[in-house]
Each structure stands twice: as C-alpha cells, then as structure tokens.
Length: 219
Image (cartoon, rainbow, N blue to C red; front, side, top):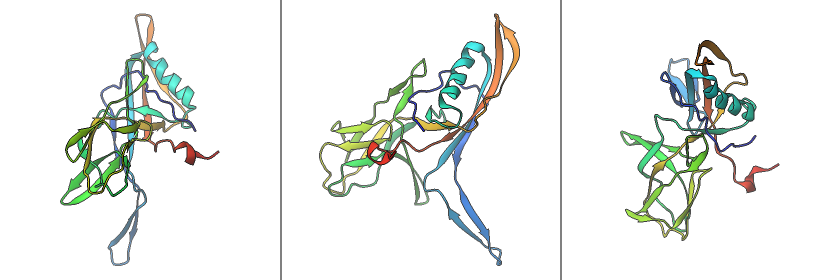
C-alpha cells in the first residue's frame, strides 16, 4: 500500500455527497434500553464525487488515478470542499517537555468535545500535483515559526520543548488521505461534443489514516 501525493485534477460536479461516518455497536437490552459502544476513536469521512458532462480529456486523469492506485489498493489526496480550512484551532494544553503536537479541528457542544485529527497538509495545483500548504501557529497568542511541520501526518514539532500549560493554536488549509471504495470505475458515454465523447460517472472515496512514520512502518 502506497501513499500517492497527488489529487485528481478534474473538478467535481454539483451533486457531491459526503460527510463524517462512525461505527457504533448497538445492543438492545431486554428492558428496551440500549447499550452502545463506539468502535472508532477517529471519524472516517466518505465521499461520492460526481463527474458530469466531462469530455474524454477530463476523464483521463480520473482513470489514470484509478489505474495508478490499482483500485482500492493505494491512497491519494482529496480536498473536501465542505471542510478544508482550520481557523485558530486550539490543541490540547501542552505538558512539560512536549515538542510534538497532532493538528486537529475541535467540535464542542454543551461542554462535550470531539477532536478530529488533521493529517494531510496539501493543496492541489491546476494539474492535480500536491503542494504543501503553509500553516500559521501561535503559542499563548504569540505567532511563532520555530517548528517543523510534517505534511503527510499533520504533526508539528517545536524547536524547543514546552514548559507546560502553553496553549497552541493553528490555522491553515488541509486535505484528506483517501482511497477508492471500488475496484471498478464505471463511466457512461452519453453524448459527443467537438469530436470528443461526453462522459458521466461517480467516484466513491473513503478517508484513510496517514502513512506510519518510517520507523513504525515495518516490512
């Protein structure tokens, strides 16, 4: 399984569907009450991405990505247009000696918080190539550039350890690692325009975890 640092260059069409997904085990007790257990600590987003009325030249990048990924085998990058910006997001309060932080976005309602990890610090150029995005970071409200960002895993490592109690915040754009949810890629040819076929299809994608650090990846 590989991680391909590239996006599909062809633009999505209107009719996009996507959002967060969880896995919950629900057991109904004899009393009628439910016992529920969350199987996942991290959300998995899903996407159904339509490509409608595209010409053959626009279809080729989609097919090429599917071929290079060998269907569901390999991962690549996708920008979720419904959620790809972090603005002054706070991270867990620093502890003494801490240097590394996992970037995240936080949702809080009625005092209950869920923290979604952010992994891929990339954006697409016009050809679908991945460009590392710039992020801004503050420590106790003061901007700092004394850190190194890992764009594949969404971590930042500060040059000097924290003393404890610091509040780290970050802003920037990000993407998600995804894979195709199908080994087949059906498209239809429905018309012809300017000597090229007009094609339509839908691509289903699933969010994936980032690559492991090299030291933990194993054989």
